[in-house]
Length: 198
Image (cartoon, rainbow, N blue to C red; front, side, top):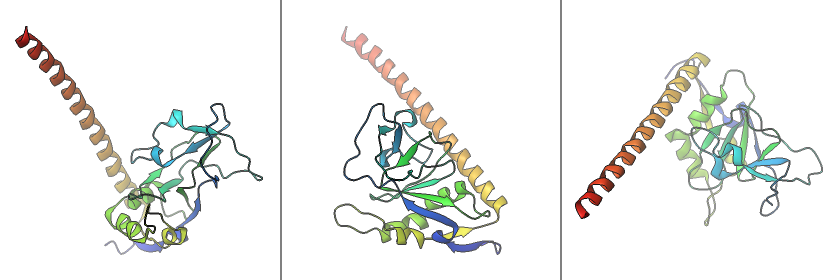
C-alpha cells in the first residue's frame, strides 16, 4: 500500500445526514416544486430517470437541505448499499429518508473517489455486516460514520476514477452492441421462421 495513503473514518472526512424526514409515503404532486431522489433512482453510472423524478410539495418549518453537485448518496436500506456521485442535480431536490447524503469536507478526498471506494468489495462487506433489521436491512448513521476510508494522494485518486469511468463507458458500449446484435438475431429469426412456415 502507498505509504502516503491515510486511513480515516468516513465521519471524519464527510458530513453524513439522512434524506428529508418525510412522514409516511411521499405524496406525489405532479406540478410540485420539489423533486425527490429515491432508492430506485440510484445507479453506478448516475442518477436514473433524472427528468422524471417524483415531484412533491414540502411542509417543512425550515428550508430543506437540498442536495448539491458532488454529494455522494448511499442507500441506507436494502441488501445492496449502493453509492452514487451526484452530478449537477436538478434544483430544489431532496432525498428520501432511505438515503444518506455524504458531503466531503476535506480537500484531499475527491467525492468521485469516495463514491467509487464505497462500491468496492471491502466497503460493501462492512456495510452489509453493519446492516440491522430482520425484514429489511437498514444502516444506522453511526455505522456509516465508522466506515474506514482510504485516502491516497489526490493524483492517484484521479487516476483510479479515470480508469473506473473508462471501464463504465466500455461496459455501456458493449451492452449497446449486445442489444443491437440481439435485435438483429430477432429480425433474422422472424424472417427465417416466417419463410419456413409459408
